[in-house]
Image 1: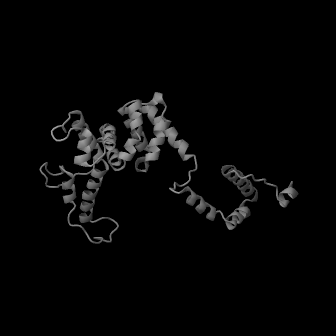
Image 2: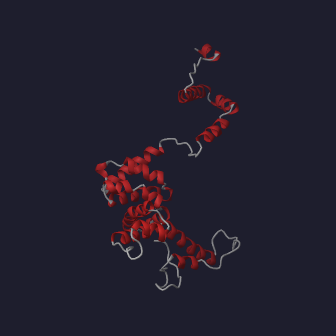
Amino acid sequence: MGRQIDTGGPQGPGKPDTAAALARAIDQLPTKQLSDTPVLIAQERELLVRCEAALENLRIAYWAAGKALQVVRDGRLYRATHPSFEGYCNELWDITPQYANQLIKTWKITEKLFELVHGKSNDLETVVSKKLGIAQARELVSLTEEHSVDAAALLYLALIQVKRLAVTSDMVKGAVQALPPEAAGKKRATEEAVLAYLASIEDKPTLPSARDPYKALARVTKKLNPDAVQAAMELNPSGTRVMVRELIEALSVSVGIEVEIKPSASESTAA
């Protein structure tokens, strides 16, 4: 996973032992762009390697944290200082038991997935390290609980093989929901199901997401002004009339306003 850097730590070159070692490896911080060339110079490439190693560590830190928390919980390693695992999480690490449980549920998925992509010639390991944060891993938990860790890992692998860095949490969630139960855990069947799911969402027009749907509607309304409609009429009068009529009918149903659409004088004459 990632690229090796020499931190000078106790584990030797290329194997930073702590997040602190990764942070210290980012030294000689530039206050401005070091060169104007399109291709990075050697100093910039080295600095980028160190920075991206730290970022990849942040992205998948939940893997190590979840694994460690499960060991502490199941082995009751907290008992010398805390009466309960919940107290250990809250008091020592300032995390809730709920979040600790999420970390524990997701680490096995991540570990299995890295086993599947390790050493792949198409650099899937790097893609996974950049994309599979806890938000995406959480979407795979239900599949793991219903079927297996293998089923979850195979589904995510099928997604990144097609979409690579374009994979989103919503996409993972949708693929999990669309996966037929009989395909779970089967590589070929999972790949076919994922391809079918991706084809289905790519064929559907989607509206940009917005936290405030009222503001989103207001923006759309501003763009749909008389000038825009008139321009469309000049290009395709009959098609524009059909679209406007369908839009009015759809909006009226949505807001509960009854609208009676009568043909215009020109339409009546044409008829």
